[in-house]
Image 1 (cartoon, rainbow, N blue to C red):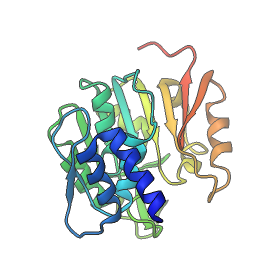
Image 2 (cartoon, rainbow, N blue to C red):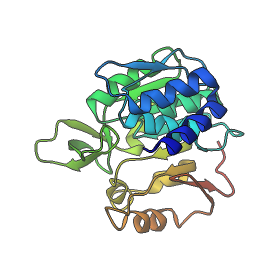
Image 3 (cartoon, helix red, strand yellow):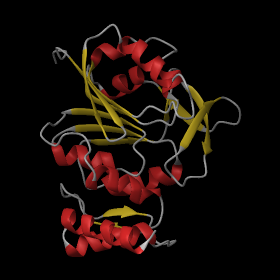
Image 4 (tube, rainbow, N blue to C red):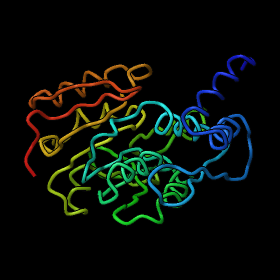
Length: 250
C-alpha cells in the first residue's frame, strides 16, 4: 500500500472511530501476529477478539466501518448463517440487545472465536455446523484467503454437522425468523435448489451475499426460490437485502 493510500485509510478510520481506536484498527489490519488482539465494538459485551493481519480485520471493517445493514432497524429473531468470528452477531446485539440470535459457523477456529466474542451475551446460541438443505456430514475446504472463505461439500470424509433451516427453527422453538443472514461461500446454490423451501415463507428479511463470481447459478437459484413471495430489495456493500412486503405476521 502506498504512503498516500495508507494515510487516507488512517484518516478515514480516525474520522469513524477516533484517534486511538482508528489508529489501532489500521495497525491491526497490517500487523501479522500469532497472538489474538482485542478491539472495542459498539453495543457492549466486552472486548472483541481478532487475529491481526487476517481476514478478521476486513470483516470488522465491512460490519463496523463501512455501511452495513441499516442501523435504524432492529430484528428480534436472527439466524446468522456463516457467523465467522461474531462481528455480525455483535452487530445484531448492538441494534437490539434483547434479540435472539442463532449463530451457525462450520470452521472450528472461527467457531472458537465466535464463542469467545459472544460469551457475555444472553440470547445467543452458537452452533458449529454448516447450513445445508439436508442433514448429514459436511467436508470443509479453505480457499487460501484466510478464515473467511470456508466452503462446504456434502459427503466424503466430512466431520462437520449439516443443519437445515427448518431444523434450526425446531431446535430453537421459533415459528418465524425476522432476519436470515446468509454468507455461506456458494452453498446457497444447494440451499435454494434442494429440499423443501417452504421455510422461506417464515422469513421477514433475508440478507445474503451471493457468490456467482466463482459459482455461477447462485443468484438464479436464490431468486427463483423466493419468487413466490413479494419483496423489496436494497444492496448494502456486498449484501443483498430482501424484505418481505407485506411482512409476515408474528
